[in-house]
Amino acid sequence: MVTEHTEGTESTGEFLLPRSRMANERLHALVPGGAHTYAKGDDQYPEDLAPVISHGRGAHVWDIDGNRYVEYGSGLRSVSLGHAHPRVTEAVRRELDRGSNFVRPSIVELEAAERFLATVPTAEMVKFAKNGSDATTAAVRLARAATGRPRVAICADHPFFSADDWFIGTTPMSAGVPAATNQLTVAFPYGDLAATEELLTRYRDEVACLILEPATHTEPAPGYLAGLRELADRYGCVLIFDEMITGFRWSEAGAQGLYGVVPDLSTFGKALGNGFAVSALAGRRDLMERGGLRHSGDRVFLLSTTHGAETHSLAAAMAVLTTYAEEGVTARLHALGERLAAGVRAAAADMGVGDHIVLRGRASNLVFATLDENRQPSQRYRTLFLRRLLAGGVLAPSFVVSSALEDADIEHTVEVVAQACAVYRKALDAADPTPWLGGRPVKPVFRRFA
Image (cartoon, rainbow, N blue to C red; front, side, top):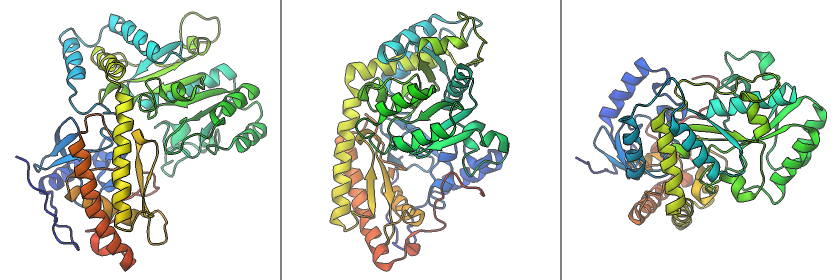
């Protein structure tokens, strides 16, 4: 039974989730952080308004209190076709009845590799895993082995690459990472070729790789990615594209397929499985084969995972790839995102907050910034905005679309955004959002103390 979302009072926002609140308490007693991904933590949501999900279908999810939401950023961007997509779930069911994991490779591993490499023809070999961290760390290890160099150069403007020490040591949550490890990771700014070359010059013959998301909330300037390609070649380091987000959202072949710049290695995940656990490391044959059996050099322990090639996850990936190709999913994601962006921007402008609720990113990957009366990023104003969205039945830590959204979902979202913007305007006029927060503000994921 779906309950109605009540608007409540402006000061307290009396939209209550009693069952979710109790479940969150139980989660915190048993699971560190109350979730298995920090970005899903209840600290990312207004106080006592972190719904615990019962189930989802298409672009909608239901919480255990009986509320239905239009959901954005589904599965942290991994569910791009919508929940329980029939083509994907049917492919998974077929494999579950045939066994999911064996002592030798399944024929599904061959079929999935062929399908992936046909979709991403800029790569020559692929190896599958379960999560993005393992794939990016394998790429870094491979680059270090191939170059004999110790340092990793990461793009400083991109928020996440891996849960492993080489990246986490650079964040405020670096507890447990040796200082010596931290010193081996250096950073370069996105879009600045001169600064990147200065870094490569400063650490000449020390940098094993440049790793970055080829595009996220900012489109690459003309010639930027090609310029990185040239710098990597000139300084003898490996160019790695982290396509966890851009893969399939920018084009079926990822950002490299859209912009025409070929990295040495690239990593994919998220949309690849439509919620099922599968990621991929792909790239040049001469590099990838260093983790294989047909070369004469030192062996690289590239990726070796018990569950990395489970047949049902690879079947899900093949179903996703087929659906994208046959149904034009990438184009649909862009069209939906453009429609949503136009509506949200118009609603914000009409309410006089167009300079304070700011959409960023490619249409298929929209995020929003919440700015205060001085037009500075504000977690307090984000809390206000999220609270109003939730009360209106919109679960949106971002505005990243799935192809399951319908016109009615977009229209409803824009209506709720308009209502949220009206409250946002009142808070700006008061120069204080406190009366509309309902508790502590949301917090950034990466912070030193809980």
